[in-house]
Image 1 (cartoon, rainbow, N blue to C red):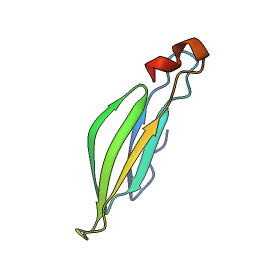
Image 2: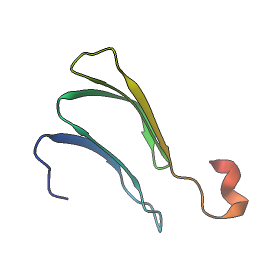
Image 3: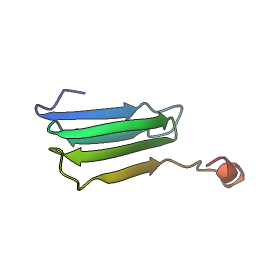
Length: 71
């Protein structure tokens, strides 16, 4: 993937037939990644030190119904 000027990101590669996960943000934002795995990305963000933070959590669950409990 070609880098995009002015942005940062984290990408979790696909495993097998899974599509993978990604999160992209502007370089001027302060983003913390407490954790990520093949199945989730957990992030908090603030823009230019403002007290208007937000939290993002993306989850990629198991497709087959007998594995749903793993999500």
